Structures are given as C-alpha cells and as structure tokens.
Length: 261
Image 1 (cartoon, rainbow, N blue to C red):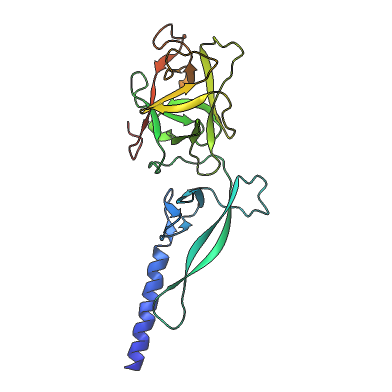
Image 2 (cartoon, rainbow, N blue to C red):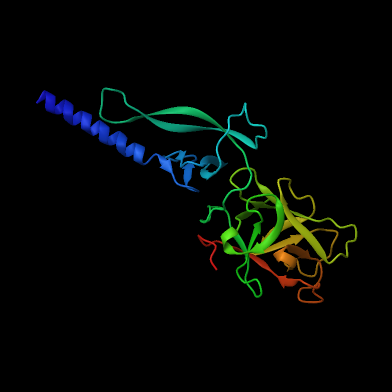
C-alpha cells in the first residue's frame, strides 16, 4: 500500500504540472496579467506581455528587451509573475511571487482583431466611406490618418482631450495641423508619439469632434476624406463647397467586439 500511495502521489504531481504547463502560454493579443489576474503570463512565441494599464496586460507583437541593452526603451515596468513551485511534501502546487522587469519597445506589427476593454473603433457610417475605419498606415506606426478597410482598423480612446491610438507599446496621438491662415479649409491630421498641441478632441455621443478657440467651425464634427483616403478636419460648413477630391464625413466610435463591415 505504501508503494501504491507513492506512485499515485507521483502521478498526481506529474499530471498537475503537465496541466499547468499546457495552460501557461497566452495566445496573440490575449490577456497576460494585471491586478487580480490569475491566468497565464507567458505569451506565445513572437509576442511579449505589455502593460497597458495596472489592470490589463496584453500579448503584443515583438519581444521584451533587457533595459541595459535597449537602445530606445519606450517604457519599463515591474509586475509580479506567479510561478508554480513543487514543495516536495505535497501533491499540490504552491505559488511563489517573483519580480520580472520588462522593457517594451514599439514599432509596427499586426493590429488586434478583438476590441480591448476601454477602447473603441472609429468609423464612418455614411456613403461613400460607409464602415471605413480610422487607422495609421502602416498599422501601429506614426503616419498620416486614414479611413480604410476594417482589417487595419485602429483602437482609440480620448484622454484629456487627446485622441490616443492603442499600439500595445508607446501610444500614438492624432495630431492636427496648426495653419498660419485660420481660414484654411483642410487641416491635415497624422499619428505620432508626441501629444497633439493644437485643439481638443471629444466625443459628442458617439461622434468624434475637434475644436480650437481660434477657429469658429460651423460643425465641430465635420471631417473630410480626400486623396488616398487621407483624413482631414473640415473647418468649413458640412456638405457645402466641399474641396475638390474630398468627401464630407462624420466619424463615430463603435464598441462591437470586431471591426465589422
């Protein structure tokens, strides 16, 4: 009976750790940590666990690089990671907290296909750009702003008047051209790692607006989609004297789990 007990205990321990190992890898764009998180913390190959906020860490493309070797660190954070430890005296796995320091670097990658909590898609809801989505191009990198196909859709939120683009590493911000001539009809927009210094973004209901004290816009929600699907702010009246090569649009937040057509 003693030998049988030892064999049973050994088998139970082996099965327990096999199960833990099978569940220890987080898929691409899955949650890998955060306050109260008790699931797996190791991302699949080619992805690294990025801290989006204290409550939500996500597997994003790329690899974590040590702080001492990173030439352009974006952010460094410290988070507890749970690791199983066999005590040798019981068939149960105990949990030991160890500290792991991650340095996350940015730059390109693939966009998440499922909406992250607290973020929104932004899209047009009228012809000729019905369900075209706001995005950077190439995806997740500093670029001009575009309304394009759902496959490249970005995820956004507004913080302190800034329109923030989720990238999984350093945030991108939608910037607006500050023209010398305040009667200029089209204001260019682009995504960059620097915060916007001209005007304020806000949602009115689900409609994205932009305003600044030195331009009296007839419609704060008026946008233009012009050559190559590039997005501009329309400082004039909506659907009136639209600049050549452009279409008037309003753009709206969308909270569906995927960027639908």
